[in-house]
Amino acid sequence: MLNNKNKLFFPKIVFEKSIELKHNTSEIKIINLYYLDWTNKEKKCNNGNIELPMEYEDVIKQLRYAITDDYLDEIRRVSWLSINEFNVIRKLDSSMKKIYLKPAVAYITTAFTLLGDCAFDLNTNFYYRGAYKVILKNLLLYKFWKNQRQITPSMILEFANIPELLTISMDETLTEEQMMFLNDFLYYVNNEINNNK
Image (tube, helix red, strand yellow):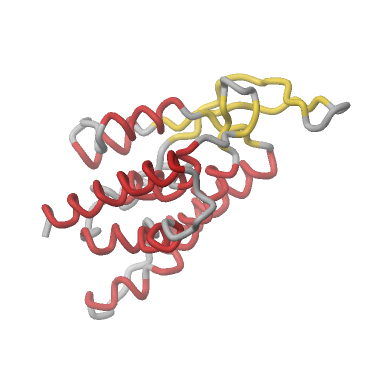
């Protein structure tokens, strides 16, 4: 993603290598693998310290993303749009902040949803289908919004779409492992928000 030194700090999408991916039984596709470098965001927003418990930081740092050129173009496009929206100088009442930031938030959510869709598992040499998949987009969004300037804890909850996880937690098709990861993450986020009130 792109870096804006004034307002929002995105992770950098770093090319790692090209790999062969079995698209179906007969077709092999060459695709580029990337990882997210959060160093600049952590430095600017949290004095260089990690922002989440190591359990979540490890998941985020170990993930790779098999991103096609079309996906990469769209992720970059919506990232730029979010920066433009976020940086508009508004002379509105600050109590309306949640309302007028909705377009920027939607662009950021789109970028991380696309990234989550591209998550790749190096162990299986295929797209990531592990238990963390159920919270992956929200986990990435939570890390992104955490410690960003001028973003309150209640805004982080909303912008990271945490309430949608409550709905997902009622899905009876989730595995026990998925439910455990989802509930642990909700417990962690709830404690974080309550401690920062």
